[in-house]
Image (tube, rainbow, N blue to C red; front, side):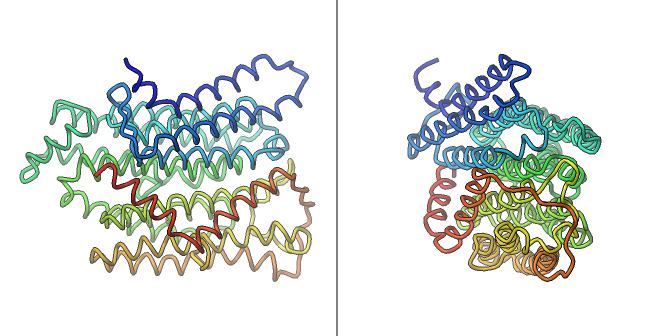
Length: 482
């Protein structure tokens, strides 16, 4: 061990300590003092804020910690993105988590430990450590899905997610075993060198390694055909948990996806690109077509998330410098937009009504015009309307595909985006053009939650109007690992 080992893991360590502090505070909280739990999110905000500051200090540095943690601009980009997702989730949880009767100490602790796993996934250069980080993240998200103990639907969703997640983890672990059998190592840089030496004739075990790893990553990003967990998990989990796992899990999984397939397995590009191309096309089509048929807003956003995974896979297939940067930009765009949308849904939930059916939004513009306007802008961004960041993100991804000659994928992406507008606008029409009004009273929104929603809105609009800065940072980040 040396000083650089610990310098490399400072951001992860700060989030870990914040999680431990939250856990200890919950353990020593007097049983009857429920109000104390309201402040547990503060520990998370301090830890995540400190992690962002530490990550900014690591920009343009090149450190390796404990032989497997790589600190480069790519790591820094994802550390900041994941910590920002955590901060926004905690801000939006203020008041909403308490009203939803969630155990606050456990809730914030699990969020922080899940972020630790996500950050490790984005920074490690060893397949075994990626697996360990993936399990740390997954276990936190499994429990968060069922954290509302009175919800039988949440328990069922968590169980399905856990069983299918264990199944996909087995595929991933077998892929690691195959990689070791073929190359004698689990280090990504060494795997890349040994795969490159046999790229012209990779052999059946090498191809099997690639396929097994692909299945594991495809499950975590919610791509077809291993997307089955997504609708049930999204619908059963509390709204903010759904927003957190739809953004943080996807960002971390794609970070590891990029490291493994665009670095270690880049010599096998001619073998995996056709497979990922088909997966991307099917993912966009299924996510859009099935999403149109949904009446549950959370299930609709689940299929929307599947479609967006398809758009991100288009960037992975394009894999030019523009395509790689477009993927990172799109992940930020999707994260800020989706968290905002689920933040509005969480603000509307009451103990007696989940506010999940499309009809629940009828006449909302009359009773809650501010929330209706915010939700409209978030939905328009998900649909890819200018001048929101969703439009810019899709433009960059599809443009990168066109530059690489992937005209069919680009056209399919545009067509599915147009079709998806239908189910986003259906909610907007219900809010503004329905003569009826949903009978259930909509709760007032706390000042902290309002601030979180306005932060998300600022990101959606500012990055939509001035995307150049983030795109430049994304390009510099992804260039540091190739």
